[in-house]
Image (tube, rainbow, N blue to C red; front, top):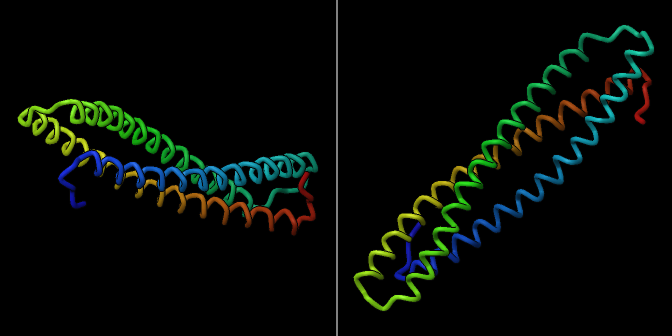
Length: 165
């Protein structure tokens, strides 16, 4: 990223990128909620299947194992995401403090020192944003895989003529 003469402008640009990532997170959250509802429905269907004493096909066991693994991966990615958000928030809070100092001070040597500190924070935030972008991609891939497995399980239930709740 090319930095401006005024680090405050850089903070504004960075803030816009953060907002864009946050919008993506809202979309992911909505998809996650939808997936969770479908999983709950599948769980209820599976309980019906167990209660009916019908022999559970091997394919179900494999699919449910895959689903458990992908859910664990999703949980791990979410935990990593939360750590990145905390790191970014710490930098943002520090950046806001630095921004105030730059605007309040007229002494050029102090201002230059503050600018250097802000630029270091900008670089750190830039690195975290890159990690967050990768994390979002991984979470989306995981959600897509989760949805695929759920769809497969739903089809298996349809084949067994077990209706969702």
